[in-house]
Length: 234
Image 1 (spheres, rainbow, N blue to C red):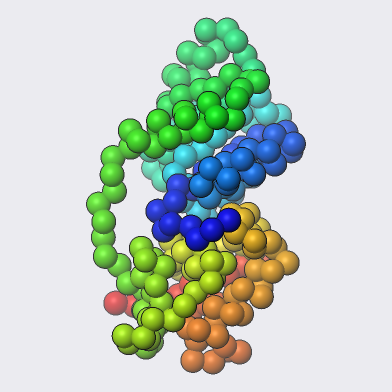
Image 2: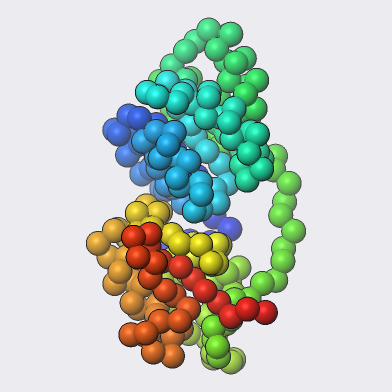
């Protein structure tokens, strides 16, 4: 995939069908979205703790906590009450569709569906969202500064090139400075990064922002959890 815009929508697909998750992840990525997946409600909750998403595609019929129950719970939690939710349902009865909307979901698509229809519904929801107010925020690491909006790393006036993979990792880490992100969360967004190469990309980024990459101060390892970006305090 080509260079990803800084404001590319990040979609979380939640479905217990591994084949459908894989198909949706690939198709939505081809349409220009950043895509993460979760196999069940508990998996989705764990991912929501570490990353911010622009929209959730949520299957209703899942073992354990159902999609309807998860959607209802997310609507009363401050961090997720405004997260757009598009439900996937195999149920054709009007009562089931109404129940989905009553939970606070923004729309629904009935299975089986055409992937193009899903993309059209997603884009329709995203267009209705209020435009975020642009806030200029630079993250500083000693002599270095990172601009998340431009994916730009500078040392003074000198711009240091980031590869697509490095830019993707920096953008995700910069979205939640001070929070640990797991290798799986960093790998799931694609762009050629997987859980075996995350460590390699982290090392490359450290060489660009750390005074000593062997004893990192800004991009640190959190044992048992993953990696954390720790910029200078303003």
